[in-house]
Image 1 (cartoon, rainbow, N blue to C red):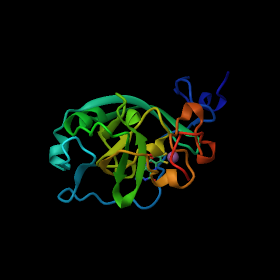
Image 2: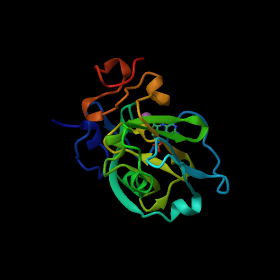
Image 3: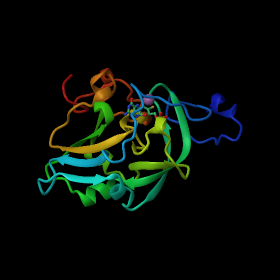
Length: 210
Ligand SMILES: Nc1nc2c(c(=O)[nH]1)N[C@H]1C(S)=C(S)[C@@H](COP(=O)(O)O)O[C@H]1N2
Ligand SMILES: [Mo]
């Protein structure tokens, strides 16, 4: 099986892409709405909802920057069919956040919240993947404003809309609820390898009633 599009890009590795995806040169910027301005003194990262201790957990920018730093090499698959391969994301693993601010035992899903009320819901197991990372860096450099500075989520095994840019917090949930794109016709799970692009493809148990 060939992937003619990826062959046209010099130096591109012939790694497998999910069905229907094409490699894109460079790194396009894709999001809804304006790029928020980072205000370091007003920024905080909050974990709230059904935490194990019933408390909210907050980190300011300085505190967040001091959390253990890890790297994950991962692809980014946009549902509009372009993919970017082999980016090195640096930041704080979602697992680290789960360890520092444990969820209550009945938590099944999380809502990841970003600036301007953007959100995306994930099953707890997807969030807890050892490759899910709150990235501050890409390719060894701090993220640029358009790509989510100071913080974005990367969930390598799901479509890229599941990773909010300009992320500000996580809500632990005891039932599933749709996020921004999931309410607007995108698939509740969003697995690119199963081409779960749109909500009309959902099967029983994939998501809350529409
Ligand atoms: N806050 C926010 N994050 C977002 C989006 C958005 O609209 N708002 N779009 C998502 C989508 S659809 C994609 S493909 C990726 C694109 O990331 P990039 O612009 O860094 O390539 O960001 C995701 N994160
Ligand atoms: Mo996207």
